[in-house]
Structures are given as C-alpha cells and as structure tokens.
Length: 201
Image 1 (spheres, one colour):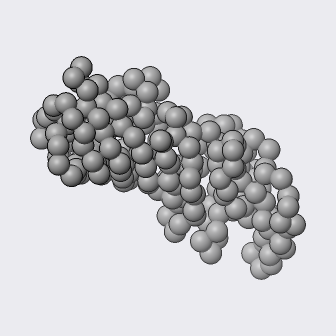
Image 2 (image 1 turned 90 degrees about the horizontal axis):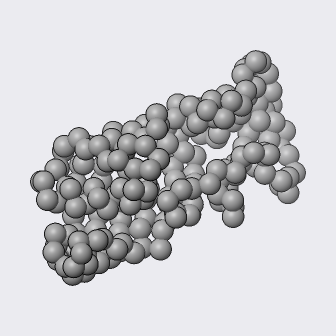
C-alpha cells in the first residue's frame, strides 16, 4: 500500500469503525503511519457501498511516519468513487499540514548534512553545525519541477543582512521530491515551521 493510498484506507476504516478520536496505524510500503482521527465528513453517499461520494474531508492529529511527526494534517478529496469490488478511486486530493521546525531539522539530519535550520524574524535560515554562531544563510523555499527547493536570499549576522542576487540557482541537493503521486503546490514558512500543500489529481 502506498502512502497516499493509506489515506483512503483510513477513510473506510474511520467510517466503518466509528473511529473518530481513535488512534489508527496504517501499513504502507514506506512504513506504518500512526495517527489520531479527529474528524471525517463528506457530502452524501457512503464509503461502504458502491457510488460516488463528494467533498470528503479528513482531519488527523499526532501523525507519525518514519520518525517524522506532524501535529495536524487535513485532507480534502473532491470525489471518491466506490466500486463494486470495494476499491476506492479518489480524484482531486489536497493535503495540507505544517512541518514543525524540529521535524525539518530531523529531515536535514537524516541527509547527514552539517546544517542547522532555524527561524529569524519568521524567515528560515541555515547555519553550519560546526559554527552555529557564524554567518547564517537566509533561504527562500520554492516549488519547482523537482519538488521543494531552497534558494539563497541573503547572508545574515546578528546585526546585518546582505541580500544576494535574485537569480541564484537553488542550493545543491535541496530538491525534495514528494511520494505517492502527489505534487507540491505551495510551501510557506510560518512561525512554528513550514506549511505545505500537496495535490494529487
């Protein structure tokens, strides 16, 4: 089961078991996903018998996958076709959530890169772990064909900021692809991390 498909198994499980506010563990090809179902709503139809269900919305909290923790995730599915076989065929899936700053740092640590990530005045900055008080690199997350990339925006010290040319290429190795057939639609630094929006047709 793919990571994206796990969400639709969650829909069926949540509806069938009345699983609101219950902790579920879903097996996926990329490892188990553990989460707490906060709410499942949809406009008419049933996920338990053949037909089409529209405007399906799932909210989950305390999502844990492969050592990554996300406090809250929202999933909106434009339509779900339930086949006679019981298979679910979703269309128009949007996933939104915020990766907390410690989670972003954990992902960087996995890449064995000697970089510390932080926020200064609400802006993400990168520092070299061996000299965390040295000059910081202010970065701007962007959506590109290869996924999420980081583009250098300025050099910063405690007292000064030096803007860098706007046409600098993305930082090497910063491309983060999205699994499960999703594409990254938006990414925005927020006070407690990085907000992302994914979409799958």
